[in-house]
Amino acid sequence: MQTLTHYIQRILELMKRYPGVIALGGFISGAGSFVLVDRQQGLATWIAVLMLVSWLWLMLENSLTRLFTRIFKREIPQPLLRYATQMIHQESLFFVLPFFLITTTWNSSQLIFTGLLGASGLISITDPLYYKWLAPRRWAFLALHTLTLFAALLTALPIIMHLTTDQSFKLALGIAMLLSFPSLASIFPIRTVRNALAILCITLGIGAAGWVLRSWVPPATLWMTEVAISTQLEDRTPGDSFKEVSAAQIRGNGLYAYTAINAPRGLDERIYHVWQFNGKEVDRIALDIHGGRKEGYRAWTHKQNFPDKPAGKWQVRVLTENGQMIGVLRFSVTD
Image 1 (spheres, helix red, strand yellow):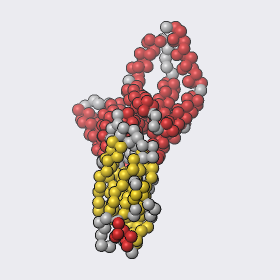
Image 2 (cartoon, one colour):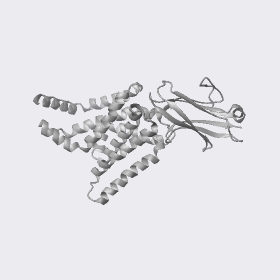
Image 3 (cartoon, helix red, strand yellow):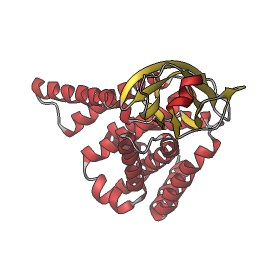
Image 4 (cartoon, helix red, strand yellow):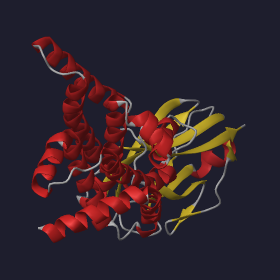
């Protein structure tokens, strides 16, 4: 026992002496994980489990610290506890960020969600921000942890369990809601029934807001590898892609909206091509895609029924079943 205690003490001292190395290691490990996108099921599992365990740690931190002190006759310095949590945040955020950076449609409201993740990542590697601004504010600390957990689950669940984007979003949102209740209770102690009902209402409000604003959240594991708006499609390969096409061209053979979508191996997903004319939806066509193909699963829709006066701004929005946007194809029809 003395030998084990000695090793633990040495590790704690090294962590305290070289916190920058720990932060750098978390950054490199998380940022490099995206390179192994086809082989990272084990890493995704580890990240998700670690986030859930770390949440329990945050909730039971004081009790577990006292237990450690009683067993090993040593107190864990408070800064070292924060270093461990900081490592978890860094590893998780820089694991999920590459997914969201590549799947975000930047000229949409998805910019806000990915921007929050990016800001959280920056805070997690900037010690003055993390320790002097975030850590003393319990509400902000738990909010960052909830956001990190939510993003980690959105990324990990389709890879680990082959859940669809819709199923993953609902499950991740449900877990975030469930775990936000004890977090709120730690900030606003429950002393009366009214307090308990107020915290419950806030928790349900968080969940409702998350569902209403789901279109702001990019589908973490789905992204388009190739797109085209074309008048031809042969052997699953589109012809020349147009940004502008004449009304005469589309009256003959119509138009093809072609998308190749990358998805995790083993994932079956229903998506929609939503055709819009001058901002109004005119067609919604369902497509089933299957994950695992390196170049992306090729899917297309063929629109032949155009209005008598088709000139104007057109879009084909590529959406998941719950309305999250994978991407958008824009083109114009001229007279």
